Length: 333
Ligand SMILES: [Zn+2]
Ligand SMILES: [Zn+2]
Image 1 (tube, rainbow, N blue to C red):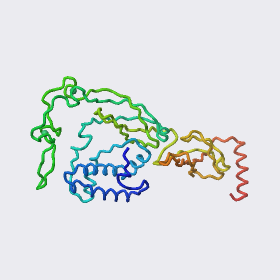
Image 2: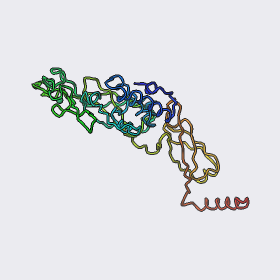
Image 3: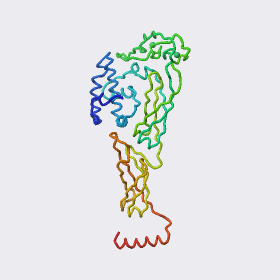
Image 4: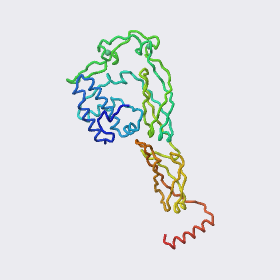
C-alpha cells in the first residue's frame, strides 16, 4: 500500500488544515500546466491527488490508518473540482494515462453481509467473483490491430475552445488508438475469456456499513472487483460512528438499591455494575468494550439505563411498599 503521508510529506497526526496546505503546495509545484510535456510531473500530480482524496476525507483516512485494503479512488474523481476551488480554470483529461481507462477494466460490484461483531473485529470472507482473463491468442486485443489513421494512434484529437486547445477522444477509434483488421477466433473480438474465481477477502477491523473495498485483481484480469460491505444490524448493540451502545432495562427497586447485571457486549457477556440511585436515561460507560482504535486500543461501550416499573403487584407486595413509602416520607425523601 502507498504511504500517503509520505507522498504529502506530512506527519501521521497532521490535522486537516496541515494536510490541505501540503496538498495545495505540492499540487501547485507539480501541476501539469507548469510542467508541460513532463510525464513524471503528471504522474506525481496524480499520486498527490490520490493521497489527498484519502487523507483529506476523515472517513477514508481512518480506514486507511487502520490498514484498509484499498479505496475506490479514481484519480479523476473530484480533481477538476479541487482545481477549480484553487483558482484553476481547467479541465484535466487524464483518460490517456488513467490506469482504469487504459486497461478498459470492467467494474464489478459485489455486496457482502457481515455481522456487527465481524465488522468490529475484522474477518476473512470467501467471495466468488467473475474474472475476465486476457485472451492468450490475441493478447487481449481481440484481433489484429492497426493504428487509427485520424488520430495517428494517439486516441485523441485536439479540439479548439476559444483560443485554447483541448484533447478530445477520437471518434474513429473511440480513444483506443487502433482499429481491428481481423477478429480473433478464440475470443470473438472480446479480448478476454469469462470465468469465475474465489477470493479470500480480509475485511479490516472497524469497517463501516457500506464501506467499499477494492480487490486488487491481477493484471491479466480485466475485472476490477469492488466489495460493498453491508453490516447487518445487531439485535441489541448499535453503532454510532466510533461508539457502541445498547440499552438495558432494570427494575425501579434495582435502580434504588443498585445491582450487578450480566449484559451482552460485543465481547460476550459482561457484568455491569449499577450504583444505587441511578436515574432513568442515565448512561454508564464501559471502557475497553468499544471499537478498536487505530493504535489497537479499545473505545467505549455505552449502556443507557431504562428503569421499568413492575405491574400487577400482589397485595402483600403493595403492603410492604406502603410501609417503605411511609418510612421514606418520615425521612423526607
Ligand atoms: Zn483514432
Ligand atoms: Zn482473442
